[in-house]
Amino acid sequence: MKKVLFFLFVACTRQSSQIEVVEKVDFQILIKQNHELIDVRTPSEFSQGHIENAINIDINSPNFKQLLCEMDKNQTILVYCAVGGRSAKAAKVMRSLGFEKIYDLKGGYRTW
Image: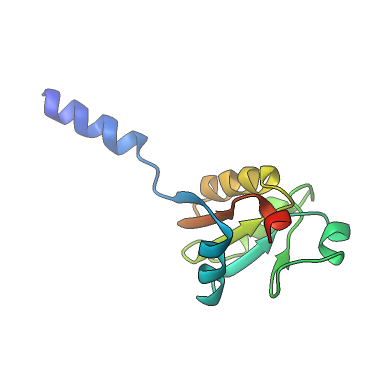
């Protein structure tokens, strides 16, 4: 009985998706693998500079979750913001929506 309860506890607490905060060098390698790249800063910040091929989906936009839901949750997602705070929040939202694998750029665009 104890083994069954332990198994149920582990199975119920296990997160099916993962978020990894990665350094710039690792993020650059991931970008070369053609994963979806999302910049969660404001459109104004995005227009002042962004990583090539990034899609701008402002985390503060009222339709942020809706836009994410239109994406393939099985693909690997690369996410960044200015310094890392908003992208960490966005990654948690993505995880809650069922995205499988999420990489967050440590230090955000300022480290780029």
